[in-house]
Image 1 (cartoon, rainbow, N blue to C red):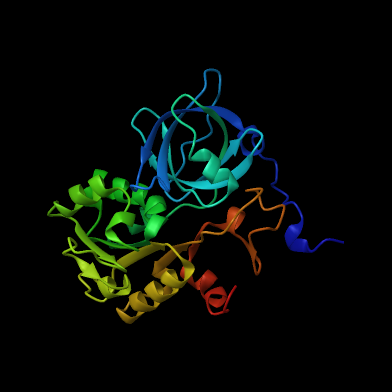
Image 2: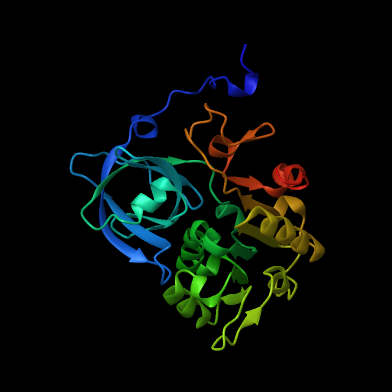
Length: 291
């Protein structure tokens, strides 16, 4: 008998959009770094397609290239007229093929899947967002939500780390966020340039500056797992309780419904039980080297 964790759940009746890719058309393509290694698509459903529910911040869709394959991509924005924005790094055969597609191409989409960032739980509290590299993309809808309802939150602190100034994504928005008086944007890079005048170093140094109420703060972090582990440790040193820290796991997912077991970490399936987890759920896994 297969392990119990791989058995279909009793509530495993899934809507069609969870299992069969629906045709969505690329409306626009935006290169997010000069090399086009990171790019954003804005997608709209083809006529006759009934979209699933709007993705919540932190959820992901499965994008399917006909004849090539399928990949999970987090939602980085929802447009006012219902378009979905996905931001992707070209790192494998499917995403490198995606890199060559332009406006007008049709791809398959199923979803949304997964758990969401606890935006409502953060209402009335300070909000700290810690992102590394392309990990800013899954947190971007949280920033949009916080700015749309700015009075619902206390101090909003964004700590963003990138490999170099040229690797920073959403540069126009970063500039706009940095100009706001009601937002504390902190940016660091691993390697500076002659023109760079900002911080150089790890993102945890930005957390250590404080500027938020340790007794009434909720934190969300997304990026490389080693970065999230050290970010959580820094947040705990600043006085946050572990249960007030949330992480988004960037694991390769195949089926998106918890059946194949490819993204299993202990008893958790990232696609089904995540990708957003309370930090105490993932903390034991973070202590295992090379997991």
